[in-house]
Length: 247
Length: 247
DNA sequence: CGACTCCTTGACAGCGTTCAACAGTAGTGG
DNA sequence: CCACTACTGTTGAACGCTGTCAAGGAGTCG
Image (tube, rainbow over all chains, first blue to last red; front, side, top):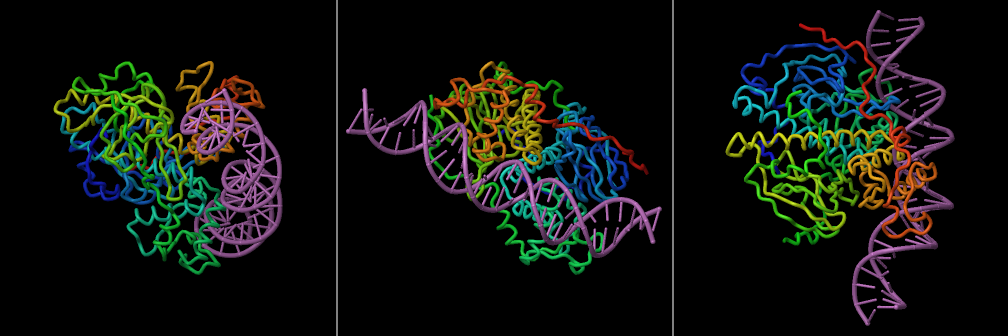
């Protein structure tokens, strides 16, 4: 391990409380609004701002030449995004619904004037830490899990990040979820139905006639079963002989 | 963009030259050997060392409860690994073949005594930068590409990292490649055969009777075709209305 | 009301997995 | 040196999960 940043692994959402502290005393935050579908930033463009969602939701994604899309992350109220290690954004970002953000100019870790900025920047590392961890977990999910396992992971992730609400309101479409999990939207829909059949979850407003936003209003009835279906990610492998033959 | 580390994006392999500089003057490097299949470190254990491969190859991976494996990265001679943002390793690592590494104790970015260490740590950020970029690319590959596209990417990655050799010697098995790309070993083998049929690559020692390590000795005949098959990752999406409605 | 988006469901195809057999090599021990 | 085992890789055949195509219902918005 190289960089010991900070041991507490607080959720991004909780960072809402000390937003100012994060970028130092001199940072200026502005409020901006993006309507549904609008771009927040583009892949390949310089990363010049740091964003925090006040209301709404944002997806980051990358497109292949033929239109296939991989969504990297969904950002919910309180989440901070736009932080990159390099100079450029490596994913595009757009508003899923009408979204209000606070944003500030680029906070530069190494070119700041004082060590004071560096101290503040530990929080930035927390964000990077979470980002990397999320991407690494997601890699395993994408590469080695089935549709049902993927959806179970997705639901548990959203549930956790929304603080286990009674009623979970998903801002994203089935297609978004599919592009997040490496599935078609139909498979996502079928997997939802299957979970519903098994009594793991249900939708508000009786199933038959949907109201536009229905199919987005999810109640989780059995988180344990869901966690069981999701399967263990991050389990340690079976120990075996492992000492190096020193010199 | 938040952290401007350094604009040059040198390959990890090229870092071989100034290994000492990377961890500062006081770092002590030792040589260790791992025989085939031995563990280098475990997921979930404290990350206490930094490794550079002198000879051989290493894979990092994570296991699911039922044995499914996702390989995160292959490390080749010259590559540095073991660097983490947090305190713990989030993947396990083991030697693919008999491997010699140089390793040094934990280099701690923030708890170092002087600003001198911080300056050195920029190189560490280059490594983190590459790691994150690789994982993000891999996520797209795992989530949205076909078997042939995945293998094409893999071959081009190995080709690039080995500096486009005439003859590419792959240290890993078909199963390793499959677990890296989210495929079964049979699909990997079939995809190799298909590339061979198309004249994109060939194996040394005539195809029919394989000699143990054959099927590992690859000659790329048509990198352009391979790049074409790999498809564009990182293409910028179609521009559209994107200005925020300021306040 | 009409166009559009979103979701669900059915039917079917196909890509990739699984199961299996076979071949060649390396390693081991007698 | 040779038999034996283990490992690796290739290929065939069948299966099945997931994608694709299609249709239809429901809600939203202008």
